[in-house]
Image 1 (spheres, rainbow, N blue to C red):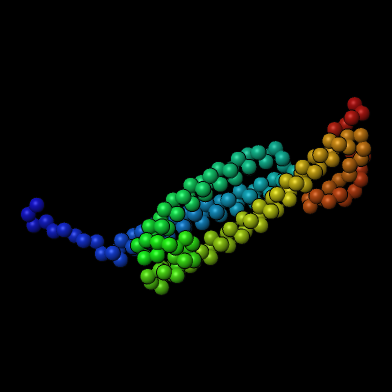
Image 2 (cartoon, one colour; image 1 turned 30 degrees about the vertical axis):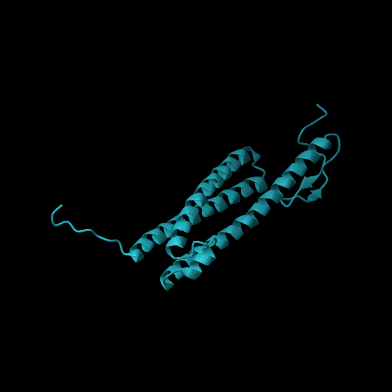
Length: 176
């Protein structure tokens, strides 16, 4: 081609594109984590109010979000390692390490805010998961006690799972 010039990419621009892709992906991953937190809260509400009819649907949705999160993590790792290599730190394996080698203060700030938000969401999800697991254990125990004590009073339970009063009513009337 006559008059055509070859344009060379500035290495800083390439880094900027890869780092921007990583930043956008981290933002999407934050959204998926927020969705996971929402789904866990939804599941917890169903369990705490005794609306067991919808628990299966809620757990299926939690599984879907977990699969999306796994897929997003794989994509993030690929972008992460590309940026780490471009920034001269191919041995970096954690976001905190990548922040330390970021070429500018702006990238340290952007990636640092992602790190803080992702860490906070992970902590909230871990706490919510523990709460949901407690509700599930309580529901299982109540169900087992109900089945085991069809001929004996089983009492009533608070949302925390503790017994609050003995009563004569039954889930199943065995006298019929």
